[in-house]
Image (cartoon, rainbow, N blue to C red):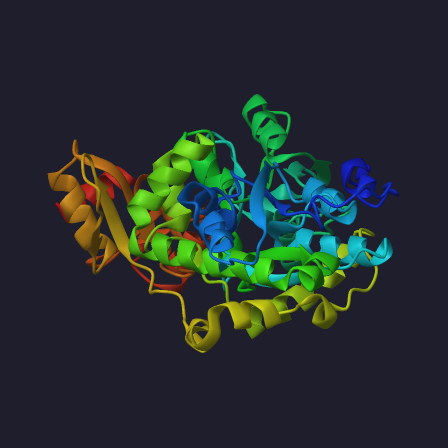
Length: 445
């Protein structure tokens, strides 16, 4: 079946009337306008967390260039309106996911208002930031079961890219094989609960939130694609050229916010939760010490390479034409902002996936060397746990321990995000079998 018209996404390509810049350019007071997505929590080091810490304002005050700086923080639900405002000259710096970044590049070039990718926020080298979920009582057990079904996603988003690629690998035409519903994440989540869609493909933090709330279960872990996905910071080219010191101040502040998140992961999760209304346990799933996302402002070559591969997906959906990714990526400002420390950040790798428990009433988590050890702890502290996280045995994607699919393989207890991955492991390991979470707890006690 053909998916419904992608009206919302195509509106992005409609002409805009250019407006004045958001910055009061020649006076003694300069307003810098930053567009961010508070609930897209893999951008927090360039948005929600950065704003709460006040690091950008501090860096601006340290410029001592005779100007008085004000920051206008503008919160949006998705990247599309940020792009629209940037190309209208109303937003100077914005943050969004990889697919919206490409649309940002295409839109800027189309209107003669070019933008540049200047840094990275949160990333996952395997693609684990996107997940396909279904309702808790759904009979769907694999991607192949989606043939002929209704699937909600946001066309032009990284989550849609995951859906398209996953369906193709499963032998399903992403245009003809399903009925695709182009919906905002909140609308898609409601549709899933109401039974008006069979599955939902979305980006952070929606899959984890719905699973945590008991409103969904994972059907497909985006990390199975083994293709990097990330969020990044984009700036208007004219703004960057006119006020390079301001952009560099932003990137310094972003690096400081990244360091704060790395050094104080629980406090950072609590801060983001307070600002967004998301449960801190969900924020920590993605942004924690061993979370699904790794934060680093360095523009890593493998992320740029992934961005180039993403272009074909957007072209096939007729959302963009060709995009010169190399000219869009501009790491000069972040290199200058971070100086000698940039090389170390560029070479840094994500921390190893680890089982982790967040006990009630504490400001720190506990890590374990194996999922079985975590389960042993949980079985002895059943009433004292705020959240427990385990990495998928195949992809390393972190998931809630009580929402994971558990496999017993001899004395080993192995967690998986999605049932199909667990079944694949069982098929390849004689004697292994899927067990319930309660059974896994008993085995570990």
